[in-house]
Image (cartoon, rainbow, N blue to C red; front, side):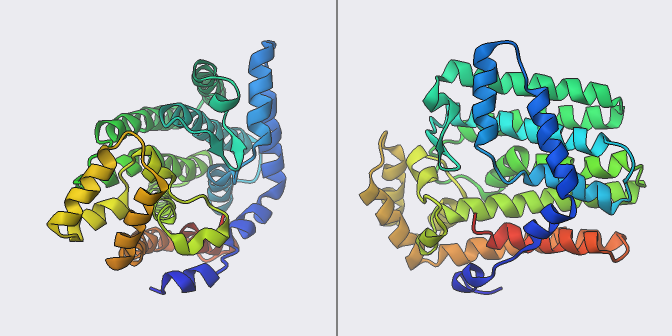
Length: 337
């Protein structure tokens, strides 16, 4: 695999290809989200309007739409409704995340809990989930209802598992993978499998898209966690160090702890024990990460999941839709926004 510098130069447009291929459906998905979140309660309307305006990549919704298109779904609007549903689950988890992490900025804008308060943000997150479950029931497919309700449960358990291991610098890599699998990869997997289910795809195709989504999600999260410690990517406009300042243990820290000497281990443990971590503390971590070449190792691990995701699509015949999804695995690693 190429170096970080090569990755930085690799502008992968597969995300935009996917977006363009389902643009009409995505517009309708946005409209569905807006109409579904409408409320007579003034504060609910005000907060959901603010949330919608913050935007986002809508990657999970795009995965549902793209998977449905790959499997031949063309008639009806179930893909639009379920893409909106998947996106609402994601949005609700972000709102809850921001409260737990005491986050103040997301996508360059103040979070709901920053603008309003924690209580309101948690309740709005719950509101989004309740609307989502209404849409799932309206769709009427028990397999989809079971899948998305189970996914919501796994996401919540992943959040608790992460809290349980907060500040644990000697966390096992296996535990980290369990956390990101539950928090991120499960919803990616559900997003792609939903597209197959509503298309009446056979079991092999449903399983393939579920496996694709899960490994894409793992790649996406590993890349995101790695970006947080990659000072070479400052030009991409991502604020680095957020996970460190919040005390989250992610793959770069886990791999670093495995390599450093005893004195450096004590330093790392003490840094994560602090209630407030300073910029100088972060700079010490960055120095160690560069010393032991941790960024490259993280990307090498992500490459493993890229290969798994890409290979899972071999069950489908060659098509434009298949190529876009296959190329999306590289985007999740080399993305610049």
